Amino acid sequence: MRRRRESWGLKRFLGVGVLAAIAAVWTWTAPGDPTLWPARPDETGVEVHLLDNGFHTDLAVPRRALEARSGPLADAVRGLAPGDWILIGWGDAKFYVDQSPMERRLPDGLRAFFRPGNASVIMLDPAQRDPRAAFAPKSRRSFRLSATGFDAMADHIEDSLTLTDGRARIATARAGDDARFFASREHFSIGRLCNHWSAGVLNAAGLPVRPVRSVTSAEVMATIDRAELDSRAARD
Picture 1 (cartoon, rainbow, N blue to C red):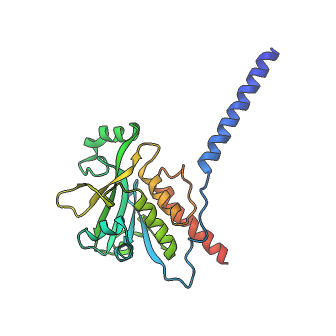
Picture 2: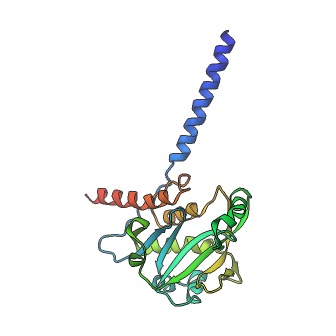
Picture 3: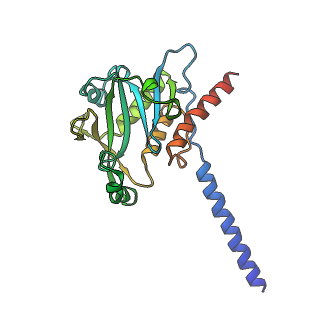
């Protein structure tokens, strides 16, 4: 009887330990960088928008700010069709690009989720309309980055590109669509989804993020809300 009680006690202890470890990982926050975020009140900075379609997040970035830089990301942007804003996203090289009805794409979606090491792409999509007019407030978060924060964010996106002779390589383009999908050196799977990538981009810009919880687009949007609240509280 005593051995049974000891065995049960050990199992309970181990179970509590596992649950505590899972909770710690789930709630872990990657710290921000106060030298990058927020922009100083006297700094013009760069306005960026985070867009949510319900399950996926993209960034809307001023084209002028990207083209003012040097390097393969700026060169790739210069080769796009006209558009004052560049929508930037990341995803599986096949599933992300495909726009056929979802019911036809489910088997490929399962492949993208559960097969490790899937190829990925970065979307650069030129848009003329200001995101504030094109996207409802509930599906958009607008925020201002410092100049150094913006450069750090752009550097992070650029580091995700696969380069050939120092230039970004177009993996695919859709007929009748100005979006271009550039090969990325990262891999897509259930452990590394599009929203994880967006959270990483925000963290590179100086914002604190919860990487593990960034499975959903809502969590990535909440990253902006929390950062803005923390910034206001610090100023007050």
